[in-house]
Image 1 (cartoon, rainbow, N blue to C red):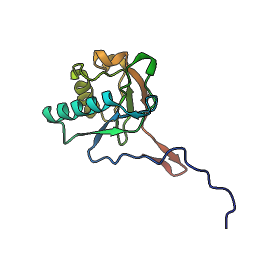
Image 2: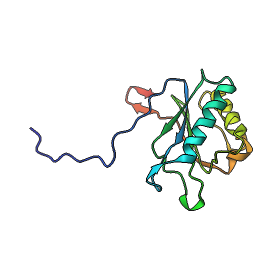
Image 3: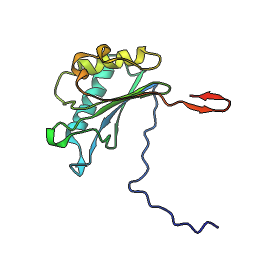
Image 4: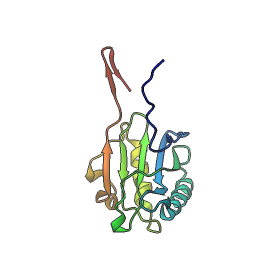
Length: 150
């Protein structure tokens, strides 16, 4: 029997099950507020409606998620949104305000779906998102002695 102490988890494990090929994650739990994020919840509702109206529901699921740790509370703009898909780069954008037109978010969704690997340069992004990029994370690739596994 192992006598080593069990390390408690700081927060409960959190995962979002993905039911569509692409997923848009909207932060809805502001750690700096200690409560649910009302702007994030409004943005989540707006994005779900816009994705549905654009006919993108078969390609995208829009989910709320735990804190994405990309907001800057001092700026008063807590909304962080991420795009992810299997074998594609993950993107995080910050300073996304509910109530602003979300045409750029829909345009990015279409671009992201069209790219095999989700990789884009800044000049490929819709204008409003160029200055809001927090991260572009390459797709996970595991390399073993037998070769790479995606």
